[in-house]
Length: 393
Ligand code: NAD
Ligand code: MG
Image (tube, rainbow, N blue to C red):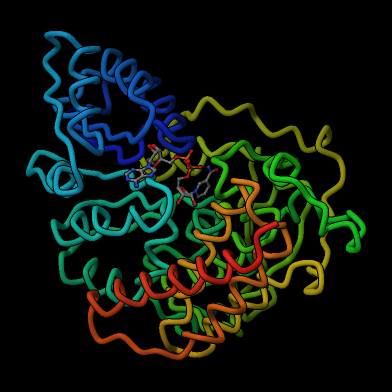
């Protein structure tokens, strides 16, 4: 078997590390062409020693020098800067790109992979939330293949009919049911949410994830972003997407058909399952995940999300309804608010308040180009930062 060549963007993050864990189980199947990191130069150096990529990318010259020093005379060439990210996804030898950078920084390299016609394993949901229309167009025009890594969307993808082409009605699909764990504050008294600390917010009951997405899970903004992500991936209207809380995180999402059938994908809450699914697609391969023992799992339960507790979820549905750049505004304001909250600069409940303020100010702008969108993203960040400055504690 000729090995499949991979570039992993965000290799040092949670998704990146899980991807390398799966890849290491199948050395005959995959070859790592490029790995990218940001702050954790030591960790990236260690990954380079183990996987011997042709390229490693860091953000700036200082970190490039540091990485080079750690690597000594290894065959890995060290590159730096944003352009290098776009370069290592578009190399002719690269077959697949794992897009696992967090936040808006992941957009440009994901777009470059789309334009280069690669198979894109998309973890960076912010790409679709920020620029869904432009990204999907680039995937189409570039002849790229898009495989969702987000566990919910990967579950939907697996539960869809083979050859699904973006027409729900034609395939007899009535609705997409996205499951949500409800995060760490599902049952906490609403009156006490004002006192939530960053440490409490990042302590997710079922998943081990990066800090930003962990806070997003606590506010359920993550599910809101995922509703928007599902809209673009599966061409589903807002009213064709429903969110259901499922605290055990065993069912990762479902597809409901016109005949009343509901198909679901189940597994342990371990990202190596969707990662291995996408890496091997359309084949299957071992992921290193324990087998699901349903008798031991016991009860699976479901609830309707309480919008008073999770206002961010409603804001995402509202943003999607407007067919404007509201999702871009929402995403940008959320990144600013989450960073400020993690920094102990604002209270937990100031996160939804910041999003609301940004949406009110900028929610109905339109964008005819990617440059317009980037400008709106910047404007939304400025509005959010101003709001945050007026509400620091
Ligand atoms: P993380 O914070 O653990 O890792 C982020 C990675 O991005 C790191 O490798 C970091 O070096 C890199 N990075 C950060 N800022 C960067 C920048 N400005 N430029 C270039 N690289 C940068 O995050 P994660 O949990 O691995 O999540 C990655 C993405 O996958 C996010 O978009 C998240 O929403 C999505 N996702 C994660 C999970 C999960 O279980 N962790 C599940 C579904 C989707
Ligand atoms: Mg998810």
